[in-house]
Amino acid sequence: MGEVFLALLAGLIVGVAFTLLKLPIPAPPVLSGVAGIVGVFGGAKLVEFIQQTFF
Image (cartoon, rainbow, N blue to C red):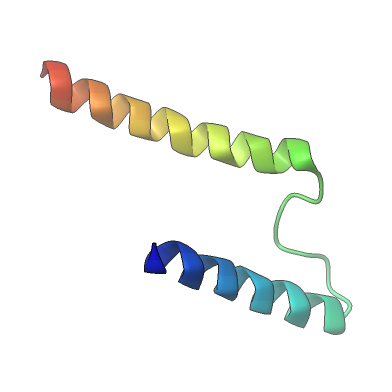
């Protein structure tokens, strides 16, 4: 859980810094983009699970 907190904290710091520097944020600006990233992660974890379970 500490890893998740540190990742969130790093993301918040980067978001604040990019906004203060008036740069575009280095992440998808809409919820559908974030959902796509979650889907990619979920797909990778699904393949790992299937490989470990059946092979």
